[in-house]
Length: 494
Ligand code: XMP
Image (cartoon, rainbow, N blue to C red; front, top):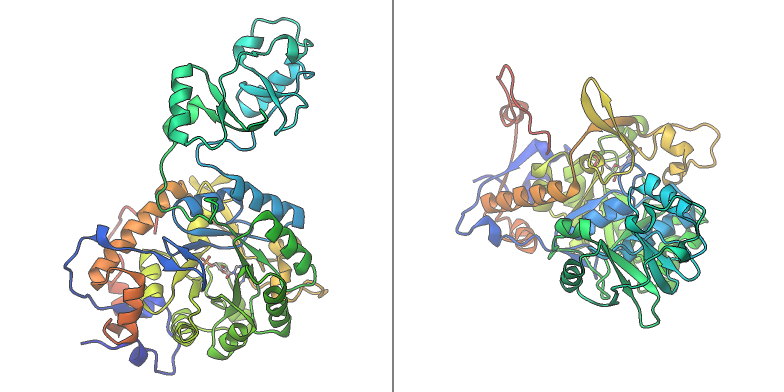
């Protein structure tokens, strides 16, 4: 029944995710038995096949932290200075669940007025005091509301009012233990110090309830969260690379709309020569020839897609690209021979698209629009016609190019800019901490329907022709989605 993937993609027409469907398999297991562990690059594995796109309206530190905690990975964009991008990486690498690693501190020479300023700006007043007022200085006290609230003279220096009798714990303590100590101390904050008595981090009473365990978190060998960063193929890339690697980036994405270029090949060779330990995701590519060149130059994974993104107009404007499902299938089949995983990037609009991309050979999926409306994406919410929205823009939209995104399209130094992307808005999706578990649960159920328990098993069965597919007519596609209702309640999320 149905067709093997090879048979289905043999025709002359490029297909995309909605043009076909996976036929059901046999169910003899519960969705909780499905394991979505997957290969991100040759050497790196992650527990969920989800990546957030390196776009300035999608991935900065908060998104990358949420992605890594929930089992995927975020790729920090490069529409910023080298220092800004490095700092975003550092924020992810220094993140410790439950521990505030960059607390606001004051020095004993600051005044009560300064405490009020901080309170007005950040809404809290439990502030550690270090000898020299630096974040990692020697901890000598703490100032809380009760130290300052009855004091009339706001010019008093903090050494006169701070609490010096401190409860602290030593660096390395597990969060659960620290929480217990905080509870029994009846204080609002618990400073964590190193053997020299210098401040390392802080835990807060008000945060205790928020702490959860993240057993699927993507972590490096030192138990820090994993994070990726994008660079362009321009000359500044080498300086950027050095800064990112120093900051501890786990994987670097060489970001180019058409990756098969001598610029990219030279950069890959340079990276492999100078930083052989760093994993590289190269791209974007959509054909086997393109893959061959980048694999030969040292790619550890390939990013697939040219023009399928929700904000992309590359295929229209340049008349170059490929239908996304065909691109993913052909490149994955080719790269598999070299043990190089592929990432299906762009054009994914719901759980079904993720499942299909994995079923035709992708090891992971990269999303922009699906994540851009979450609270962890950069930018503020706004309302249009009563709907809560966040801005989302293509990196080759005129707006983003002005901010630096033109590097991706070799058009940085051209006088006349031709947009290959648009600016728009997407609907509020709530927090990634609810959204990702929802996607994961949906994917597990999809795997159950296909009758496979893991991504390697899915790939193996697909390659052997055991996963069966079928093309869908336009009317079948219409029938396969909501139709014929006067009104319905939309599940806002994918
Ligand atoms: P989705 O569909 O998830 O796509 O929103 C995100 C992917 O789109 C690519 N991208 C662009 N492609 N013009 C393009 O042709 C653009 O301006 C643009 N900006 C991003 C990119 O691969 C991203 O991951």
